[in-house]
Length: 263
Ligand code: MLT
Image (cartoon, rainbow, N blue to C red; front, side, top):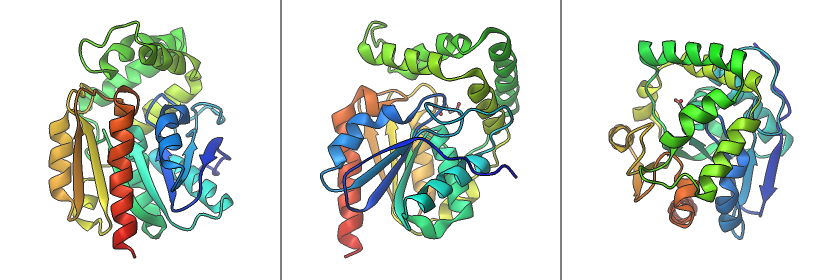
């Protein structure tokens, strides 16, 4: 088992801690609008997961459990006992791993453009192939293949958010991309966890998500006893950037309800 690493993170505000976990191969800066927009009432923590952003990117396989242990170590170091933990896409896979390890650390869960099911054989093979290509040709392989599919169809290529994401991917080190690809390929099925989640759950999806279709999110929401499903319109796989205000508002409404119902 890998030793937890010290993650880079940003933090803003005071109140119920809210931890925002980015997807692959991004970093905590994708949550900037949400961090700002929630920080008048909440303590919003946005780490860079292992291999991403300003956190270290050692060689090796980053299984979701290892990434989750890094987040637990961050919560310990910040003396956060319980938090609303929200994961985007791969960050959602890490959230499931965290739930397996330490459900008592959750005040609520956010599952944002993510899925509980594991990779199909084809997806797994594709990830290993991409890992080989990134080893040979660098992070640009992923920037080129992934960027157009991340946004709602017809998003102009010269939109600043498209450039922002391309730059983030290009700056993600090959060792981080390769480690994460192999870790995602090895992740377990989490669908059996859904009916057991006995705390408030936000399932948020983009109506134009081309990576994880909204139907998957809808199905996931029906398997959880207490889920709030929000579909952000005119958003693809990155609603926090494509529709930042609507996404912030949806998270805020959910958190406000969590706070109210917990007295
Ligand atoms: C992500 O955004 O984290 C990835 O698209 C997830 C995946 O490749 O399964």
